[in-house]
Length: 222
Image (cartoon, rainbow, N blue to C red; front, side):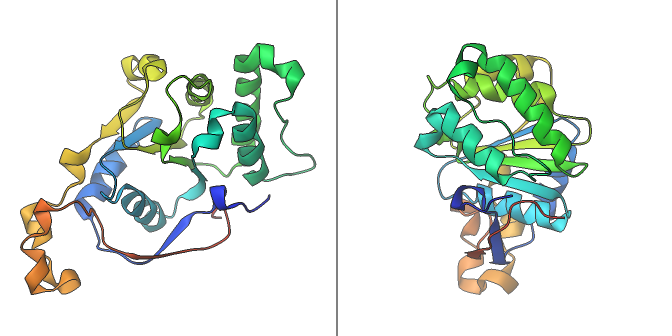
């Protein structure tokens, strides 16, 4: 298992507990896919990372960027982050391009088989993937192959792309948006974390969870 910046899970030195949102994410876990979307700076990453740590989920975290529009790049980095066992996961080479959906299904079956039971696979900054990228088709296969008890979590600034319409229609996706993520007035009055001069105004601002964030180089939490 290789350690890349793209597959390094964020670690939070200090966060504000969000029991309301943690309960909401618990309920969202009844479906295999959770889609969290909100404006930049709203604390999506902080909230989800702190939730998964609190619930002690085994996590593989993947940071999306514009390079993932090339699906071969995506498979290279995601495969490199998986437990290797006796052989690495297959790379998307030229001979597989014509059958991308078949390759993706086999890739994710093998990846999921290597991860611990009840894992969470997080795709952060999904809005970085261009709308016309083949990666959206790949994600459709990732959703179809997800085993019972595991979950995919997407963090984005936008709603799911049209290619995931089938998963939405089949009730496989739980959606959390800015209206749910923002602080409620009682949460904003939590003065022990922010101090009295700040807490009373917090519910009108963006941050979902304030933190001092550092990173550590690992991917799957065991």
